[in-house]
Structure formats: structure tokens, C-alpha cells
Image (cartoon, rainbow, N blue to C red; front, side, top):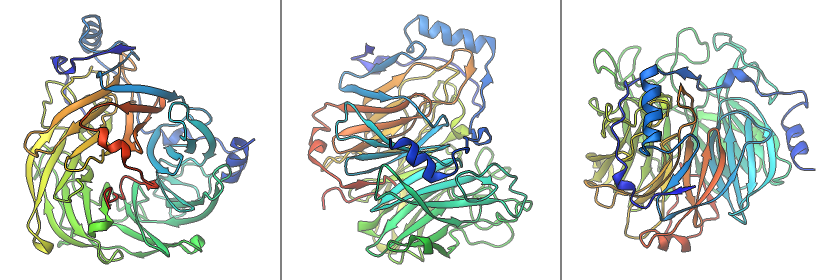
Amino acid sequence: MTLLNNHRTRRRRLGVAATAAGLLAALLTAGPAVATPDPGDAPVTSEKVSKSEAAEARAAIANGEIPGQDEIVHSANIEHLANIPKDALPGTNSDLAFQGRYAFAGNYDGFRIFDISNPKSPKTVSQVLCPGSQNDISVSGDLLFLSTDSSRSDNSCSSTTQPASEKSSWEGMKVFDISDKKNPKYVAAVETACGSHTHTLVPERKNVYVYVSSYSPSTAFPDCQPPHDGISVIKVPRKAPQKAAVVNFPVLFPGDGADGGGNPGGPTNPGVSKTTGCHDITVLPSRDLAAGACMGDGILFSIKDPENPKIIDQVQDNVNFAFWHSASFNQKANKVVFTDELGGGGAATCNATVGPNRGADGIYDIVGKGDKRKLVFKSYFKIPRHQADTENCVAHNGSLIPVKGKDIMVQAWYQGGISVWDFTNSSKPKEIAFFERGPLSTTTMVGGGSWSAYYYNGYIYSNDMVKGFDVLKINDRRTDPAKWNRQRELNVQTQPDYFD
């Protein structure tokens, strides 16, 4: 392990074209023992880079400008406590959720439950085989929710891939009973238009509402027809989850014609994604607010009536944002951080050619009151360490680190690693800690790195797409107060009021 104390000196000029037992029991509950992970759900294919780009990466490693292949580097205020490699589920690791002493880790082939009561030595409690990318994951009480965003032959955990052009194909939400963490049981499935790329919970006492984000409709897909300019709202009764059902499809981007009222994308706005739904939504139930990252648009909306969300403001950035990916509120709910997933998470965009404003975070202040609130752009933030041509790197999933009076978050950047940064001053964000691995390859673009990096009860947890589950600890006077904050449950897209 290499410890880097002065990480701000590590700016590099790498150039790149901007292209974009319990285990067995749990497995058996999810489907027949003969079920196997389906390689058709793999999200990223390997791609050779040019000889000059490969040579540049090797030279940067030799000169100490970037970490060596698989080498770990980090700032002095970060400790790497543990890494748990993949086991029974070989697919891509995805999102994380937390409850009590458990962490729930999504994987394109299912999900894994860890006991994190000793963060230095997490233990696997169960692994559930249930293929269906990308298996975005959340928990609430005794229920676990899993998104399926690949066209499947049916809604079972032994399904296989099937073209979306076939009417019998299935995509949507799956619900599991996790009252017994060693033996999760599959209890319900709800088909949703265009599947479920991600989802967000709005929990209530008797019911859990689920906002389902999905996109990319086609006239060739019977269950995903354009215009797809809204979200599916599912109501799940806690005591009868088998009765889960879609109760509404609110239109978030009303407009005339077949394309709705979202960003038209190219050629009107070259390089910008056309809005055909949302990628991710974060809700702040204590304030009845939600922020949506919706491909070509960022939105702020009210969830006072969870079945009927109401748009408050809508913004676009047709200069530097290619794909609005996710959103995070600060604790006071007077700021939103939106991310731009330039290149879809499969490109090397953390380099001098792309620059500091694309594939970055956009920080917006929320000004005004009530339904007259507006999102006002303040600045961009991007990690200050350029990556190799073979490293996919772009802004991805992160969470607040709960420090009263400060706006600090930890964030995943795929092979750019994990960054802790302060945006208390919206106009001058700054990185205060980092952790990263060297490139997976110096000759081939291989998808990997941290998918999600979240702070939970004193520690940072990361789900690395390839390397597995990581546990980190930050020791810094700026973040130390957060160690005393304890949550019973954390779904980052259902943002808690940390200080209530």
C-alpha cells in the first residue's frame, strides 16, 4: 500500500479522446438450484485502447504520476480497513443500502447481505442469486426492493434474457422479505413501464411508496412506448407486500407531441441526452422534497402527496452536462448536488482533455420559498487527479457525511476511486480526502471501480464493481463530528434528516 500525504500535487496531463449453512439456503429461496448468472446482463464490454494511449498509461505509472495496476493509494486521513472480494455472485457490483448492523450490496446477479457489526471484518450472511441488471437495492423494515432493468423471460429469479420487443418479456420491481437475513424470501413482483433502472423509497407507517426511474422507450417495445416522460409510483403495503401495485404514472415533463416536454437532446442540444424519463431520484421526506436527475434535465419537486409529486423547478445545462445521473440534498435543503455521468460510466473522462467541468458534479443553491423555489447554479466539482486512458471515471453515487453546519459528502468515481469533498461554500468546493486503486488494465478499457461510496455510522462503505466490498475510515477534524451520528436505516436516495 502506498500512502500519499500531499494528494493535491498529483495533477497529471494524461490526454485522452473524450469517448464515451445460510448461503445455500438463500440461493435456493431465490430460484431453482440450476439457475446461473446470465452473461447477457453484463453492463460494460472491454475495449482495447490505442498503442499510444496504452504507452502513455504505462509511462505515467513508471513516473509515479498514477498508481500502478491494482495498487492502492489514499490521502493520509483515510484508512482502508477491509476488502471482501466477490464470492457466489460474479456479476458487476452495484448499489448499497444499510439497516442496523447489516449492509445490503446489489450485484447484477442478485444481492449479498453483510454483517458489519465489526467494520474491520465484515461477514457474509447470505447471497441471493437473482439475475437482472442492475439490481439497484433498498430496504425498509422487513422488506428489500430490487430493480430489474434488463428484459427477462419472466419475473422469477431463474429467468433468462429475452428481447424487449416480445410482449411476454418482464422488467420492473422485485420485493423480498428479509425478516430472516440468512434466508431472504422473494414475495412480490411489479412490472413497470421500461423496467426499473433505479428506484427510490418514500416510506410511510403502513405503506412504502416506490418511485421507479426508467428511460429509453421505443416504438418496438410493447411495454416501453414513447413518450416515456414520467415515473411509475408503486404502493407496497407493509403487511401484505404481495399486493404491491402501480398506483400512478405522473408525467414530469408535459409537452405537446410524441417527445413530451423534457430536453430534446441532439441535434438541438448536441452531446446532451434526450429526456425520456428519469435516471435517479432522491427524496428528503422531512422536507417533502425530491430532486430528480432526468437525463437532460434536473428537477425539484414536492412530494407532499407521495402518489402525486408536483414539479417546482426544472433546469438544464446544455454546455457541460451530458447525462443528469443522480442528486443529493445538503442537510438544510438549500442545495442540491447533481452528477453528470458523461460517457455512461464506461469512458475515461477524468483527464485534461475533458477538463474539470464535464463528467462532474454541478452544485445548485435552492433559493426562494414554497412552490416558487428555484435551482440556481453555483459551481462544478471534479476530482483533481487525472486518470489513465484505460480507466472509466466519472461522477457517480455518493452520500452526505453528517456534520452539523457543514456540507460534506463522500462520492464514488468508478476507477477514479472515492473522494470526500466539502461544498459548504457552493462556489468553491474542495476535496479533503481520497482513496483509489490503480488501473485494472494498461491496455484495455475495463469497467470497474467504486459504484457507490456511502457514509454510514462512522465508516465509509464502497461497492467496487470488480474488486468487491470495501470499508474505509476517515480521520479528520472536519468530519470527526459525524462519528457520533447513528442511523437505524439508510437508503441514500431516501435522505434522512440526520439531526432530527
